Image (cartoon, rainbow, N blue to C red; front, side, top):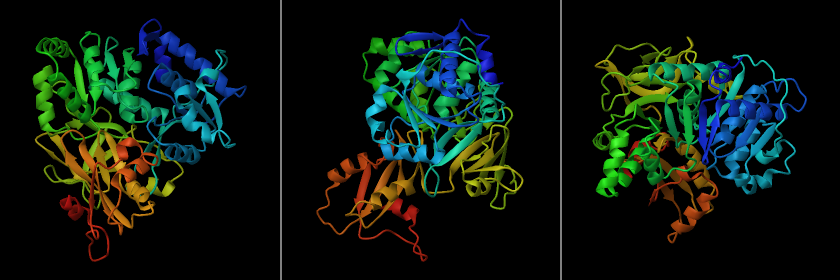
Amino acid sequence: MIQLIERASHHTDRIAIKSTGESYTYQNLLSASESIATHLLQGRTDLEEARIAFLVDPSFDYVRLQWGIWRAGGVAVPLCTKHPLPSIQYVLQDTQAETVIYSKAYEQLLSPLFENDSHQFIPLEGFSTESGDLPDVPMSRRAMILYTSGTTGNPKGVVSTHQNIEYQITSLTTSWEWQQDDHILNVLPMHHVHGIVNVTLCALWSGACCEFLPKFDAGAVLGIFSKGEVNVFMAVPTIYFKLIAHWKSLPEEEQENITNALKQFRLMVSGSAALPISVLEQWRTISGQTLLERYGMTEMGMAISNPYRGERKPGYIGQALANVTIRIADESNQTVEAGTSGEIQVQGPNVFQEYWQKPEATTKTFTEDGWFKTGDIAVFEEGSYRILGRNSVDIIKSGGYKISALEIEEVLRSHPEIKECGVVGLPDDEWGEIIGACLITDNKEFDLDRLKEWLKDRLPRYQLPRKYIFEADLPRNVMGKVTKKELKKMF
């Protein structure tokens, strides 16, 4: 039995979700997801881990689809609403998705794939409201596949079981003291563990209310805050940067009203990228809230967090969450002494099961004694962990996204006028990092504006380079490998 859904039956009359101006109770969610599950089964007793992909905006529809897929015994594959068609097509092919569910807003985007016999495409509006017998789904079953950029090749599908997800939820609801009277505003993408687990599922596990704002707008967010209903908020540093800028642009009376509302919040969290201390301090001045910084990954949910009660130290990510075991290890995967830097390695029931159909990559990311190797370098000092950096310069963290520089380079190299290129992350107060691209071309009149338009059809918006330089060649070591640290200096 999926405990998340069983728990919802104890809160049937409470508001579970606010979305597109409507309020939905836990009973509405249970009934709607049962209908989805029944329709997907089409007379079968169990989907038996069939992959069901879906492309809808963050909303009540998203959650009823996710829960319906789970209740039918399927594996949920949420698609990114900002991805171009080739990226979506890759996920559908890689997961061998049996069915693709989409809302009308994405019909035109997906229409070139409708003739593909490999997938059944169902418009969200085409679902019936019937109910029927549903399978008893074991917690050991695969539940979800989320795609994450790696240091090599295409994105990998991170497979989590229902048990993995439950432990990811409970480590947070325990450590951050979630209550059924909490009300959280969700402005985060729903193909990412931050928006799915930390916000939506933690709220629904607790009998709380999750309100969706499908498209981020700083004015709209501050307007919702000023109503005094929301008391929990989680975002990436970029969002706090934009909220600060908007607040500063308002008349003094409006600023005061918003500040008074913010002071009533129970918890505000920042994650998915390093939080600049300047942003933390400005937000504390505006809101009276010290942002709680935490650390996690798609492969394990959250693992480390500053304390809910106690001192939150700027520049530190805190201590291990409930039921999560952390060690700092050297290159031989041996635990190092406190105060010595090394790789963060994690053990616990929150850690994912596998990379979808990539047994070698799965084996490579675990030590022989079962520790998940995060690739992040940190040090444990003064009772807290502090991140020092990534052991791969090919991962860029921008606006909460983890982006592979190698993926962007592959796309750039396919341009007929680009001979070679190098992509790096450049420090930025607002985004954490922005993407810089160094281009090698023989065309002395290369049209950068045309390149930018060309890239829009091939990369998600958050993967588009912001800065470009042109060079005769890339810096390389004696083995001919591009030295990214030297390339960064050239910017």
